[in-house]
Length: 361
Image 1 (cartoon, rainbow, N blue to C red):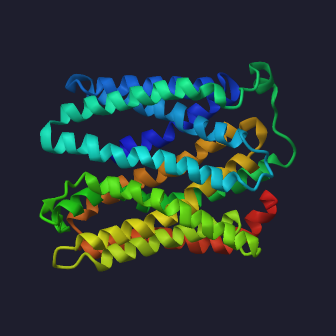
Image 2: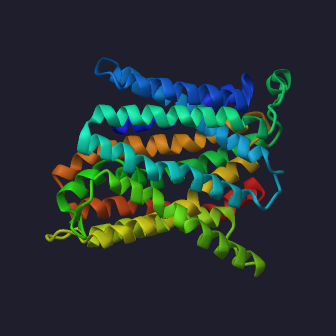
């Protein structure tokens, strides 16, 4: 699981490079959607399961960062609406992530996993058609000759180094977040009281809660940012990233406190997901906005792929740490995962002055 998630978030580096230098964001995103569809059709057949995951991961690499690049191209680099735009994009993405476990997870867990894969392939095919139908509303791609002739400018090296530093710090956030997609499901099966008003909640529905929380949190978070901006108190982009990592750490501390000898109440994990995903909203859309605005124009897509590389680092390490779930005390296991984003928050707050100077924030 850790290796698949790692590959899923490593391939955007390739997709960003193709979008920057060869095919353009629009065409690369379409190719990615079609590859995702083909990969999910392949996993329906057991003999093609692993090759299908590979094709799906390659498609995700072409799709994800180029959708982000296109969103960034909708706004001038100094447009203050960027953070809000990427938050709205994140809410849209999480709508699918909320509905997916409800439909696909329930089919797989309660009926048959083959039907779950069939439903997944059908949904991705519908998404590819939606992308094709609405694609003309997106900004036109830069002509191929202009993309290939773009060059790095003096001073871009320092900018790239600073952005890579931000990327490495955010990988500590993703190390904890990725466990929600992995060992957390086993914890939910073993330690969570999943009876809710007489209904046994499927374990896979925990992923739906995790995706619903940021959708619900977007309006109040954006309202808070507007209120702070009107009073010149809105945190800068690096400050928001630090707050996001701190909230992630607090969420895992909360999970650890609820993981005692008794079954954890279901409402306890609702609080966990709410705090965790408010942190997610502070960090993920802000990182995308920061990279799309400050990355050198010649390699914007590639640098947005580097944002996903942080998820690759975090999810790969998370998969490795998952083995200790069977040998560590469960409270200590979640405390360990709280320590990583809290350390990242401390480092971000300590370094944000230097990073801001290099990135001209």
